[in-house]
Length: 282
Image 1: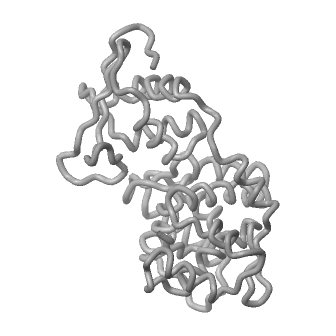
Image 2: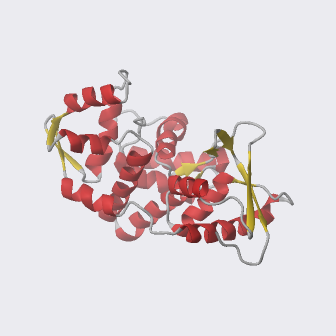
C-alpha cells in the first residue's frame, strides 16, 4: 500500500499547530489551517475551506498516524504532538529528522517499503523505472504517477532522497542512521507496566464500565513509552492475556469502530483488565 499524501510535507507543522491549538473546535481548526495554507501555498486560487481538513490534511495526517477523531473530537495522536513539539523547540531541521524516522517506520511495517525498494534498485533509479517496479511488486497497475510522486516527495523533504532531473538518488548513510533508531528499546514487562497503569488511569472515566476503547489506551501507552501505534498492537498481541496477576479481556464493538486491533481473526475494539493481585507481572 502506498498512501495518498495530498498535503505537502512543508505544510505539516502548520496543520499540527492548528489541530493542537484548536482541539475541540472544528470550525476554528479549519479556519486556522486555511489561513496557514494560504500563507504557504503558491496557488492563485485560495484553498477550499470545506476541503482543507476533510479532504487534504485530514486524510494525510491519518495515513501518517498523527491525527485521530472526527469533527470537534479531532486531536493529535502522540507522534503528532511529539513532532509539533520538536518543530516548536528545535526548528525545522530537527523536525525533518524526526519525521524521517516516522516515515521509514510506517513504510517498513505498514506501507509497501518504498524506500527499501529504492535501495534494492541501486544508487540511482529513474522515476519511471521505480513506478513500473512498484506497480509489479504490489500488483496495483493503477498506482498513479501523481500518488507516487507526492509520496516520495516526503522522503526528499526529510533528506533521505534527492532528485537529479528524473533520477532518484538515495542517501544511504542517512537511511542507515534512521534504521538504527526504529525499534523501541522496551521489554514486555515495561509494556505491561505501562498498559496496566494507563488502563487504571482511564477506566474511572468509563462511567462504571470496565471497558476502555483500545484507541484511547493505545494513545496513552504510546505517549508514555514513546512508541508507535503498530508497536503497541504488536506487543499487545504477544503478551500473555492471563496469568496469576491479571486477566485481559478484549471484545468486539457493537458497530464498526475505527482504531481497534485484529487478533485471532477477530476485530476487537474494547479492553477490560481484571487485576488479581497488588502487583501485575508477565
